[in-house]
Image 1 (cartoon, rainbow, N blue to C red):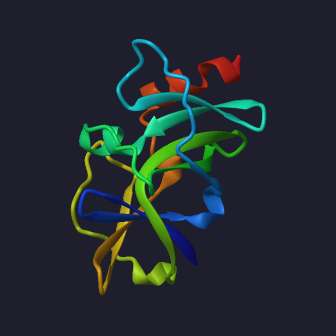
Image 2: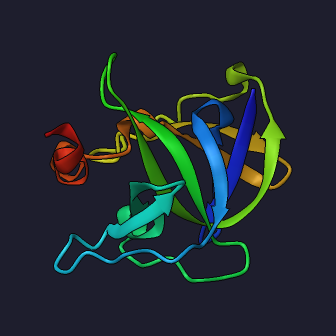
Length: 152
């Protein structure tokens, strides 16, 4: 399998590239006044408004820094078996892809609590790499806020 790797501080995370539509530069984002901190806003993707969340804010309660390698990773977010939406993820240090077998990832043995999206880990020369499950990324309340207008 091929994974897109990004960092959150010193920690490395991986997204299965099968859910990635495109990796975009940090575009202008339309901010949404009084939105939850994790909601960065809306970006325009080929004429379609796409909600964007800040992974740093969601996962560590600090906003992503606008750096050269900070990107918007556009993913297919599956709400259920029939509904798939586009979702933008702001991620820092989006620098590489790695090829790993799914069997290389093992259960961390730690309960992620509300962070259900934290999947198994795989050790490598650079440390631990943790798989992020995109379909579990959004808590129900945040998912309802982001996709309310599209569902109507």
